[in-house]
Image (cartoon, rainbow, N blue to C red; front, side, top):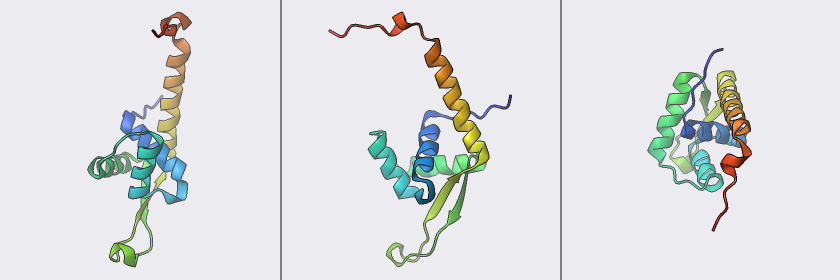
Length: 112
């Protein structure tokens, strides 16, 4: 079986690109992660992750229309590829297997 390793942040970014679907561009991805995951995200870390996952084949990107509000610079939109979908599925399957393997007593803590 081929493996598609994902780091935690990569997984969050990929999931967010899926959530945003056709509106997945840098600022929207950053804002959605900060809102939904309650996690601060630097622009540099996000851009590095997007480039890395595009290089791995998990994401594709395309330029949108030029925009006068952005000084004529177009937004770059991101889309999950078939490999990205397989990576997310594999990650979910691994997590589900691990969660399902935890004995009930292992998580039966009393909070004081």
